[in-house]
Image 1 (cartoon, protein in one colour):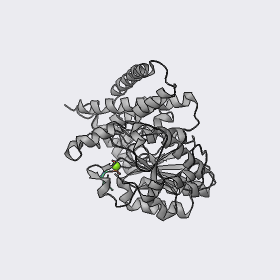
Image 2 (tube, helix red, strand yellow; image 1 turned 180 degrees about the vertical axis):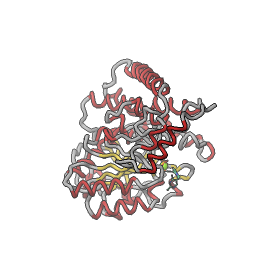
Image 3 (cartoon, protein in one colour; image 1 turned 45 degrees about the vertical axis):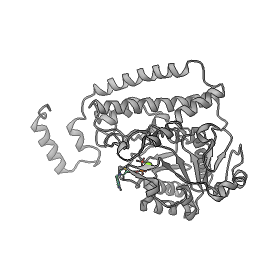
Image 4 (tube, protein in one colour; image 1 turned 90 degrees about the horizontal axis):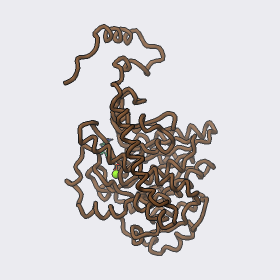
Length: 399
Ligand SMILES: Cc1ncc(C[n+]2csc(CCOP(=O)(O)OP(=O)(O)O)c2C)c(N)n1
Ligand SMILES: [Mg+2]
């Protein structure tokens, strides 16, 4: 989408700012990475990327790398299955994150238990990395009695109190000031929690983005703002969204370091997000990260992307599939056990089928539940309405 800048073409100054193997950074060091493309994978997919800035792989144990890979594959299988279920009429709506697995999975590994996630549209799976049960997760799509949100949210708007993840709000943008506000609260309370706020490329055109990042810069807040630039806001391409050279560079205007990273390279995402989280926790303030990625499927099950984007574009990004790139990397490193993929597919396929079966067998939320969770003590007029509902008996069966 973006051409190489003069500073990228020089390249060497970049290398000095983010040296290979650097474990920790400071705000000044990260400030000039907003025009390049930080990457770990040295593969065909990134070889000709303009301004590519290769960094060393993060020092992660083999077990952690495999766990990360497992999550990437699991999410891909889950997204594929859920879209199929929608097409079969078993769920009403689904928003898939296929193609964009790397930033959320990397985030799940980069944050600590006490940190909070404020997602945009395609980061629900962070909850699974942080231990949220699959059955409860899928029940949200069905909105039935196993759903912790009691069917009150649109499908795919998962959230989980036990994993510190708030619901995304459907409106584009409000989670950004919410993340920043929570970071301000944490700072005022000397709470070491870091807030991670996500957005799509489209959300960077919203006033909420500018208000929030400005505030985060001025008050040096413990927040990491992550934009998943998937090149489209439904049918609007990034080129019609902004005339900025990159999205990450917008951070400069607010005195916040901006880092542009290969969003289909899970290890690069992990390194950059982890450093930003550490920086935030150590009092270094906010970082804005642009993850350059691609939505492989439709915006949601209500969208037909063939109306606005070309097959050639989709095919060119298919070659940069983040799951496949990670598989090739692990295989080249000798980390992937023989037959691992096959056993993973089989076990996760079975786990998914069992979870779906359990969820589909659950009853709808009881009608009385609409009177719960707003007031600590139910006011008289709601008591009256509840009595009326009970007196009316069960609703007629839908055909
Ligand atoms: C304030 C607001 N305006 C418009 C919409 C309709 N809408 C839903 S998703 C979307 C595009 C979002 O694009 P982006 O932020 O790039 O996220 P992506 O879907 O690409 O992940 C729009 C315009 C909305 N939900 N809220
Ligand atoms: Mg987008």
